[in-house]
Length: 96
Length: 243
Image 1 (cartoon, helix red, strand yellow):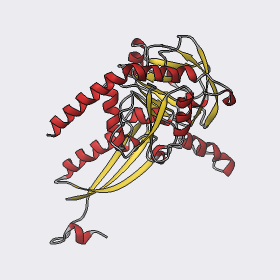
Image 2: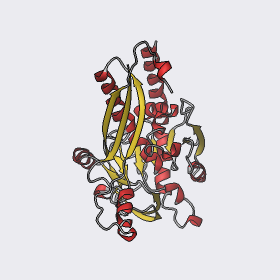
Image 3: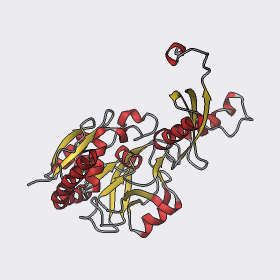
Image 4: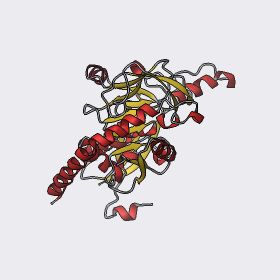
């Protein structure tokens, strides 16, 4: 099965986020005084082949822990969805 | 025979020639180690220099740790060989798991490029064995992600085991416990954010990096053969596993 994966990477609470802080500081001068709590993260998308959703999830969690995040300072939020398979179709045919 | 120091070069590394020059000034023999080669080439010590390895994409050091040379550096370190990571090299060593913790962005949200005063906290490391505890060294820093952080448990271990190698006199970046450099439990792997190679000549406004680099050369001369033997055992163990 083919799954579409979205990984959000966020700095853990307490870890310096200069991008978010700089954006937030600039907002009042642009006329947006009420905006607060700005944080900048990363969004990573990819596809993965696996037997089922739990196998896919295990592999993505491992990938996040070993490469996509540094667990000392970052957390990952993972969203995983099975790609729609039409009867008789193959992965290669569905690829755009 | 002068100590042979391998200086690792990733795409985006930019301090390798400064390190080669500084090692040469002190009588060492430095050579460059390209990241795609899975060997340290029989050197007596390894320096992972500063720069932006692999463009710092994803995170500083995150991709560099997967370069073939890093397996060889890890094997060399496990065998007791002296390994020093400077600035981006420190980030690479933490990402590779050779040193604990991580480097987050500076507390003041600024890229810092200035002279810093460092206090030698232990003389028991491959970068400080020729120094005296309490010595103040003027060595420049040049980083955005230099704010060292780690879990409270790791910090307790670093303190209890005398593994904080250098502290900032005036903490410039928010590093926990003023940490500028640490070492591993074996004391042969050291990471630091300041650049000793940029304090290696009177024209550079400071020669205080010299005692650090001299320590590394002394470690290289002392540990070279032991590490070479260890590497051989390591290679044999690897070939047994693979075989």
